[in-house]
Amino acid sequence: MAAKILANLIVMGSGIFARAVVQAYRQALANAAKSGVTHETLQNAARRAGKVMTEQEARQILGVSEDTAWEEMMKAI
Image (cartoon, rainbow, N blue to C red):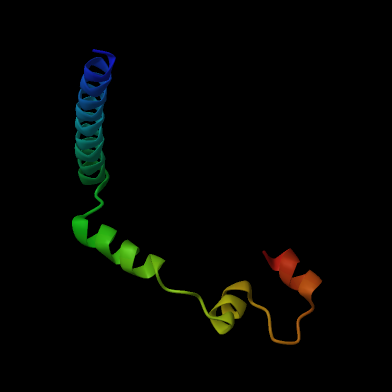
């Protein structure tokens, strides 16, 4: 008897959770559409997220050279 009740609770809980996830996803898509974020933009961001910045790119962004001391680099951040 207790096992049946527990199984019913698990099934009901997972159904509620699944509906909540779907609702959150739909809301996220609606928010993205309102803010002008397109599907293509999201895909491009996902592609870029996997890339690693090279040391040279980081130095260019910080405006430091290879001879710059560590303390000066930390100040640049």
